[in-house]
Image: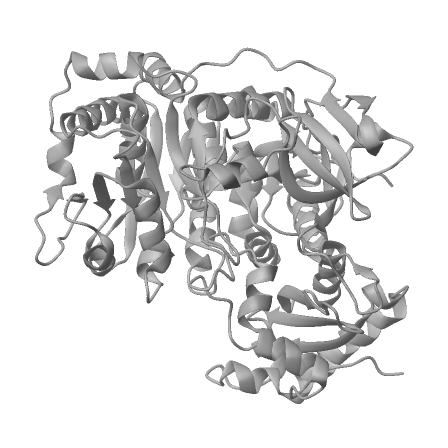
Length: 616
């Protein structure tokens, strides 16, 4: 029986293809990109006029003890007025593209207002990953960010950032605090900047901005190298929002409501979702939760109260939601009341999680919610490719959004997808060589992502993910190992006990796997909750379960390139200091392999305790 889905219209279902030289092929959506505004700030001004009293953004108020209370809302009119006042304050301080604004903050009302003020004033801003200040112990990445963009003004949400500011900020950087202070340093108060009377200088500054004006610098997560500052222009942001609207018509078909935790220093949260709300005049509820054991309860609390119309998350978030929906009737009722589409990105979503979501949906509303997905990156603003129908499977990507041309290029036995279009960055800030290396001779951006056809006899279904070319490697036998598909296989086989996997075996005779387990392994072990994770992973029930996973994978392997010959469980979580994990929680294979080289060597030498190998 064909599954029933809540109706969802797909904007692009046909493509145009042409052949190129040396086996390359070019792919376009079979529809043109429609006109779009020149500046995102124009959309904010429009909604402030059209629906001034509607809530634009809301966040729960935080009490002195850290608890979260009622929602605090800012209407479009309030947002526009406050952003203009802040823009005047920024103009008064002589800030510019050479001396922009750096924001040290999680998602907040103040962060949103300052970002919009920068757009109006034509002054770029850099939202800096909060862990660079709050988790890092050496502040190396924060120093790198500040050296790269040379900000003239540093905004911090509160005193939690004081230590990082003291360690990294130079004297020529003005410091603005939403609350608290930095010991030994004169600080401006955010509320005072908001009280600055706006003059016609604000209108002149906005009028001077255009499609090529730099809106922000977004830093890549970095792997073995320091992060690069991706230039984001007005054209990129606005073109991409129009592209999203044409690929995902649901965004414009009804009043848009988001409940979202995704960090604004990352393109998924800061461009895709925040920009979407501004572009369409929707309402954004800032979710102070996160898909971690310590914070997921807050996300579930918010989703029991607010009904989003579309919902975005990463696989770990959807896994927690899928598990909670099995027994939480209020969560099912509220989350599924109005939502027209789920959407995941950032990593592979294991099929068992997908199936669990569908089961809860069918039980609650008698139909399934489409799980949308695609492919994009910081350098593409980020939206690039989106699925064409509701029958999506893990790894499916789909077809290009209107106005974005794909170039499919044979590389080392795989097919790399490259991008050219108005949503593609002009390059990296103050990094001319890295910029030049990132584009080919025809001006296509080299993504490093490998793809295959979903169905070679029906190219209109589009593409599916085939891993990162840079992650793939050869065994000592010369056999290529395709990391992406193998990693997805392992995660699916070990669900729900595998958070992520790093594949090993470069120049070795066999493939290995280092597994980061989920918190669920504690329940599997039968040990007390306070037991150290290393003890949990060494327990007989856990080892027995993963032995079964290794044996099952071996039975379905077709050769040395996809046969996991040895597997170990890692008790030490990936760290952001070493670039092993991004703000979204996605793993950086190269960084883990680099920083855990001793573990990799011991795994393949057979000297690592509790190494699991297939049993005959």
